[in-house]
Image (cartoon, rainbow, N blue to C red; front, top):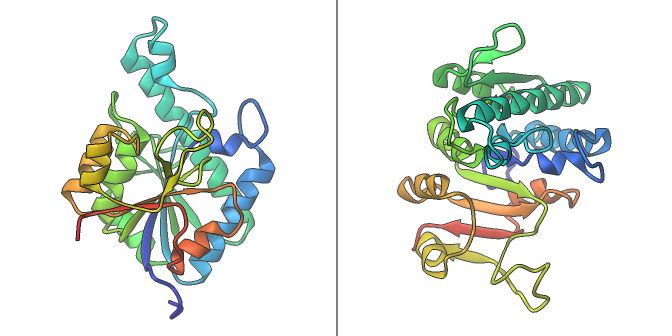
Length: 241
């Protein structure tokens, strides 16, 4: 690993919606290609990278459940959407010359491997990018929860949540132009301020296991490597010192 890097093993949480770019639905080839380039750069620098990817650009189970679909059925459909995104990202990474494996929490052996913790760690140690799909394999849990759980299981040093905003604000910056970005917070401060960081289950996993979390804007080229070098990009949530 290069001496200028702060982290050796990270888990990157990508939202499905971020893959759309300026499209109304699906995957933007330009966006997924840029993301693959950045991940490949990190891997080539010696960082062990795992990824959990959402499926909101294709399907949201909770959304259809709110208008009458069975929630379990909807969530299973959402899990399949994450597998589709994972396969697309795998293809984009391999076009960059980066070997990647998709591992799914639900068995789809014709297209990807089952998620087995020890096997995932072995892939990571061999320098492969591991894309973890289908959430945790159970309904009622978001991909944020999957990202927190998998990061803890594989021994990641930090969970990086890539979004369309550049951190946590005191208020919604779209609605309130006076909102200020918060650079560093403790888990306790997030709870006290009632800030929306991620869903409750995911946040509790990070807090209880002392896993630091950084939220940053994936739309800015080069942000991933800046974070890996230790730059203060976005918002860092960590245990109180």
